[in-house]
Image 1 (spheres, rainbow, N blue to C red):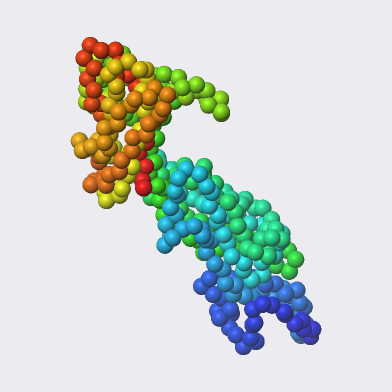
Image 2: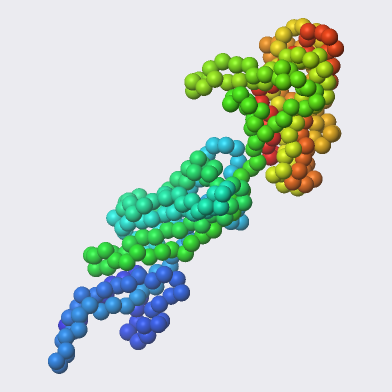
Length: 325
């Protein structure tokens, strides 16, 4: 009879039963190429399982399993800590799956059978999860992160093992920007302070550095009846108790009197003072905050100048922005 000594990071006792070698966690199947000769019998390829502690994939930026995205830029990392018997060259699959707005499943493949590198073996696996991919998911989506890898069994490709999966709730800081560059009002609507289609039009602000042409809304006050609500929109996707900032970028269009006077309102309550636009060369930002009392809120850009029969009270609106603070 011939015997071989097994050297492993996990100690195995001779009197252990097979069930004791299996863990509720994932196990590594070891194959010993040994030949044991007994009377009229030859036994080769002894198989047994060695417990290996495997950690869940981790998103370090998440807090209490909630991944909060602030702003509009910046990627996050998905990390898998080092594990016993990890070796460079093993193939790895790292995927993040969630539901899109229409309810269909979408999977982001951070690794797709790519070999682990020497750096992976030294420091653990880390791959970037791009913001542009995360932005495809709506807020409050549950993201499932799964990592799989192959196991080398005696110099041969072993089975693919799946690590314990992790789940995170995606929370995107609310940001709704209407910049009018598509020459539409988006979800905003004309109010009674712009009763004629000729009151509001779109004015080019020139070509941006990326080659796209920017536009603003021009209130040329054609009817001279432009007092009150100019643009309004009912939001239905806010969170009760959350604080939001509502802002607008505006500029006087010419020097004709009277001078434009504008403010912002939420649910018929002013959240800014009345801004007097005196300089046709300077953009002014109107901005105020409010706490949502429900999912719904009516937001308004309001004019305080009627301009009866005059030629002034003309102004540009570059954007309207609502964002969580």
